[in-house]
Image (tube, rainbow, N blue to C red; front, side, top):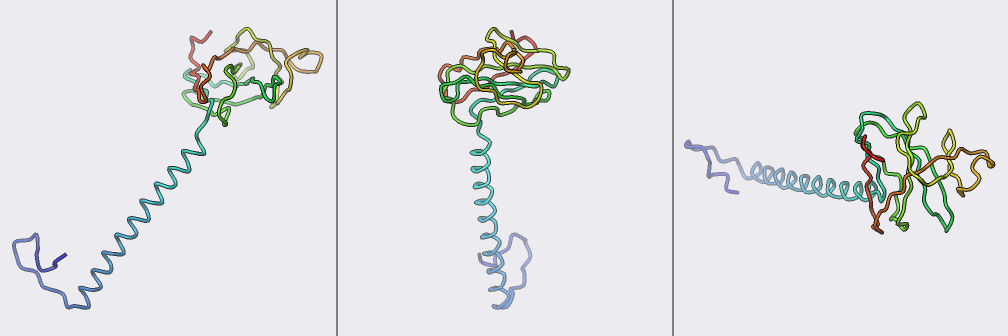
Length: 168
């Protein structure tokens, strides 16, 4: 950059050599800082997107808060897990690894415990946070039987389910 050339129509004073060198150094430093900031932001975005990448996400498109339970095969056994609380117009990552099951089962209640999303597959739940292996004899094992909705993920490794007021 030639400091003698100016965008202004009037002449400017030319700084002495030591000031010119100092100015060049500051401009170079500013460029390096900008590069570091851009690289840092890019790296942060990549790391954040990798960590936040969910493989089964449920988005609540209703105006109500819902509590969600999820069922799937884990190590060749049926397992249910709960609860995830999903606010109105919010999404929650409920399965973080790539999907290996074609079918995922979900059950949702409102904040009062009344079912808001049900299906035809009976599985076990509890009133508080749970992870239950097996879906048979829920009552006999001290759990609650609930009817989960079967979600066909079409053998995709990622899936998002949108909970609306018109879900079955």
